[in-house]
Each structure stands twice: as structure tokens, then as C-alpha cells.
Image (tube, rainbow, N blue to C red):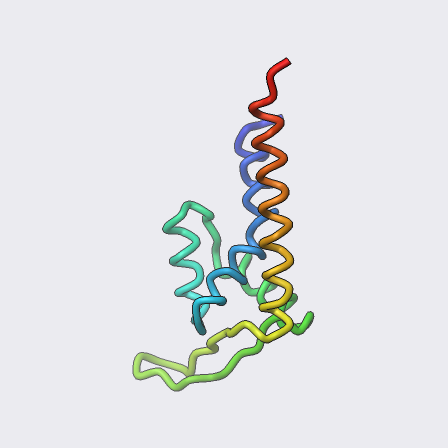
Length: 110
């Protein structure tokens, strides 16, 4: 198994959780989401992000609004719905349990 493939799979596994976490702080434009993910080295391109946003929107976790832009066409801003906030809370709890379990396994001494 190649290290880069394993790292990419781990990033993919948490990407949706990270998107919801970003949007929990307020509405965001796609390029803002990408910038924040890149800043923490969860490298994402628009072609990866749009299907995830669409899937989350179709699941009722997100909504969006169009806003006029002085620098070009209108922009789509995403926001977390109440269902999305509840789902994020459940994911956050699951994440805590998962990371605690992994930490316990890593630190287990025989």
C-alpha cells in the first residue's frame, strides 16, 4: 500500500465532516471553503467539493442562497440547515469516540 493513497483515503473520510464544521461558523462561498481546507492541508479542488456540497444539500443538511458579486456572476453561498446542525453534532460525537479509540490503540502497552 502506498502512503499517499492511505493519506488521501483518510482525508476523504473526514472531508464531509470538515465541510459541515466550516459552515457551522457561518455561510460560505465555495472558494472560501476550498481555501480553508487547503490551509489545513486537506487539499480539495472545486471538482471534488461540488459533488459533496450537492449530496449534502440533497440530504437536507445544507441550503444555499445566491448573492450578487461586484467581481462577476452571482455567487452561491452555502449554509447549514437545522438538520445539518443536528447531523454535525452526531458526527462530532462519533469523531470524538473514533479518535479516542485510535489513541487508545496507539498507546496500548502489552
